[in-house]
Length: 334
Image 1 (cartoon, helix red, strand yellow):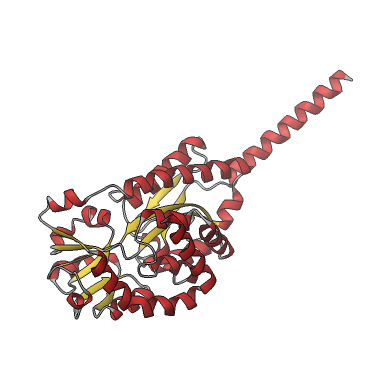
Image 2 (cartoon, rainbow, N blue to C red):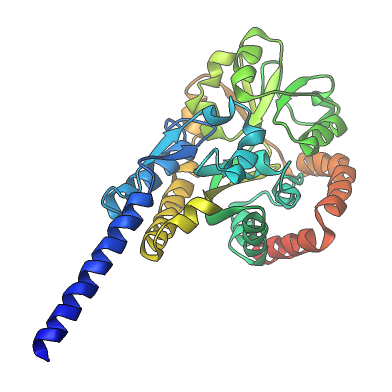
């Protein structure tokens, strides 16, 4: 009887080992992670931290390679989520702005002046609104794991200090491929010009475009002082959370244990990435000879007032209930 039990145990152990080997054989040699920027930026650093954590903790079973410049979709950042959903991309640390054309609800973060503080941003992403948005992303075909952050987008230009909507009139401002951004800058009297970041850099350098809006970390890493950007207005008009995400089919191909590892690594990497993105950079920028201006409450109020029709228009498009919840979260954070 003991001998038979030993035989049965050996057979079961062998079957388990074979199953594990088969599962490992189904894993890809490389998983493609899409990024808009490289690892010189906090955004890219977060992705690199995540990839390294996963590779180490899975003993190399999940080997992630970074593809910056949205090279997997020929540089078109607005196509990134569609490619992720279709399986062209395995993983991504993506911008809510870039994914908003496919996921309308993500436009909530781009509503002008919804929140101007990190506390307000955290109240949205870490609360009920953040949970609902993760549910929406999953319904669209991807598995969201953690919120990161690109940061508050500040306004820079080559012409003058911007302290009122009037100062923006007629100025050519590069914006991302989002209709909400077009509406916002049109309302402010500017001439919004939609283009990829790859196209924006030579346009800024040549003076074909006067200015742009991006977090200060992007300004520093991209060395925008060399792109004729001489003035910065810190207005915190919107923040751009990032999403650490995995293609649904890829996620399903991993063992439960590896899914837990990847999820936990994403949470830890995102927390580190947010800290990096929120590092104060004003002194560094001033040292570059670039002027940095902060708006007073009264000046901010003028921008809020003129963009309010845009806010209300997009609130109904995004979903009034979701936006109301976001507004309540921000109010509670104050």
